Each structure stands twice: as C-alpha cells, then as structure tokens.
Image (cartoon, rainbow over all chains, first blue to last red; front, side, top):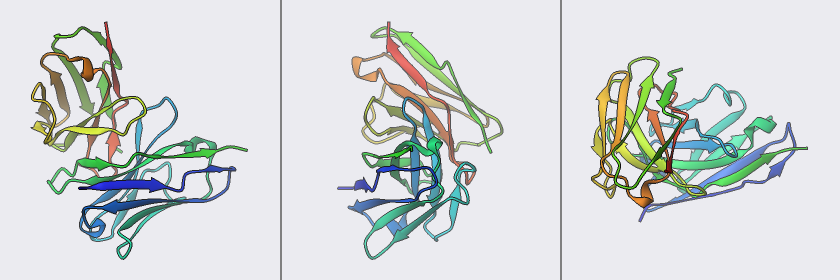
Length: 119
Length: 107
C-alpha cells in the first residue's frame, strides 16, 4: 500500500529555517516524480516544487532561491528545506507522488504538516 | 507561468443536479489537465487526469473534457458526498499551477 507521511512542521520566526520530511512506503521515491504542494489557511492549493525521477528540480517563483527539494533514496524519503521563511509561507504542506502517465497527476498525497511563520 | 482560472468560484446545487465547472488556461496545456477534490481538513484526491480519464476508484458520475485552453468537470447527478472544493491543475509546464478552486455547496 502506498503511504506518504509528512513531518517537521513547526512554529518558526520570520527569517528562520525548517526542513520538512515525507517518508514514503509502498513504492520507491527515486522512480517517481515527487512534489510539494501547500495550502495557506482558508486558501487554495499552491504548487511549490517538484523533483523529477532523474533528479532535476523545479520551483514556484514564490519560493525559488529559498526552498530546496531533495530526496534520500536510502531512506525512501523526500525533503523540503525552507530558508528565509516569511509569514506568507504559513501553510499546510503536502507531499505527493506523481502518477507515471504522461500528464503526471498527483495520485497519492500525505496528510500534510503545518508550518507557521510568525514572530 | 501558466495561469489557471476556474469558474464559478462557488456554486450552490441540490442533490441530483448536474453540475459543470470550467477551467481556462492562459495558454495551451494540450491535455495536461487534472482535477482534484478536496474536503475540509483532508488532502486533495485525484479525480480526473489527462483531461478526461477517470482515476481508479472515482465514481463514474464524474467526467472531464476539453483540450488546449478550455476544460470542464461535470458531475452528472450530485450526491451528498460530492460537496467539496474542486481544483484544476496543469502539468504541461515544469512549473505546475492550480486553479483557485470551486467550492460546491448544498442549496
């Protein structure tokens, strides 16, 4: 059974850093596109970042240069390193797996982890 | 970046109604368009992928159509469990983007 479990969410001050983890089971992270999506309180979904199976990455303009997506194949875990955090980064962060069909929809999601950026 | 615009932003409907939600892309995304359903406090669920393909386990009352810049999600006969927020998402560009969402409420 495919499962994704996020952790690492916390209250952090503006300018601070945080690393989110997404532990995967039931499949091999390195063989799939993996992504992070966030949702600010009461708002819609915002795509954040993706790591392709070959290791190439892509970021939303709102986080580029501050966030880094990576994976540890030995731990079958996806990460999101978040630096220079801003209040507008406050959100529930979801990790998701992209289906292997050509349009790469996100077919499995974690339960989310809350990041709050506030002084 | 490719902008995705959904209409309407909110919709009131009754059980048994046929409902259509539209999604427009700021440039062509070919068939790289997916639809998700989200209920409060839970993660989104994939409903339709590649514009018109029903995800495994999704009810057959859901259907999708369109290509290029204009897409629709249709629910043929609303059920109580369908009241939720629906999002379209393009995966044509390496910077994926979501629509702003359509909240479907009970009339």
